[in-house]
Length: 303
Image (cartoon, rainbow, N blue to C red; front, side):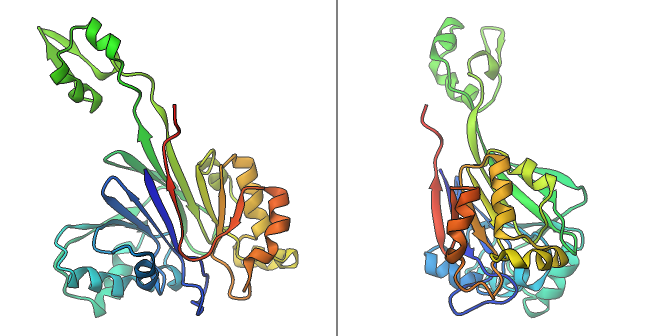
């Protein structure tokens, strides 16, 4: 199961009813945060989640509405006596930017490790899942992210019995380990079925529509994408500022064949994004004008 919470849905500036951009996901005891705009800690507390177990923070880019909440977040983690290392992922310049922000949070009881993205497309593997980072099209270097939870095939008991594999060795094969039985090498592929469909969440803000977004969002269980403007007359403004309209986000969702689209990163001028949803659903019916704190538990498809 993958827990997803869109903590903040605002762009440019926080509003009394809308925090700035941030997404948190939890899987198998690990927590991943994407962006950390102002108010992220408050949004997290409103959700009832804690920042202390965050293992990974990914940044799309370094505009203030995506990173201004970081110093306070680090101080909170430090005050909770965290000692485990924290991994940060982001475009080139990540270490320089974070160290500059840490002028007001210089002493921390844990190590920060930096992974600066150097390629247009980069995959980072973790235990049981991976994160794909892909460049998008903003007025500064900016990345989107897909988190993919892998799922192994079913353990085939009949094949294990046929190969005389002792039951106490089955768990090793299920974990992908090769074993030796009576001088014979037994590999996982000899007793495991084909890999099954996992889970995928794709997140993108601050970009014009790109082929990379469509590719990485393909068949995602959840696609979270900026809908900066809802009015069609703001199309020219979206192009100028390198942002996306709700209509464009819905078109990407339709082409990519995603299961559900959550709109986010609204302009402060968009006070009621749900007012546009009727027309947006004509393009992609499974669209939701997300609000702060919107959550879902994604589960593997039943066989």
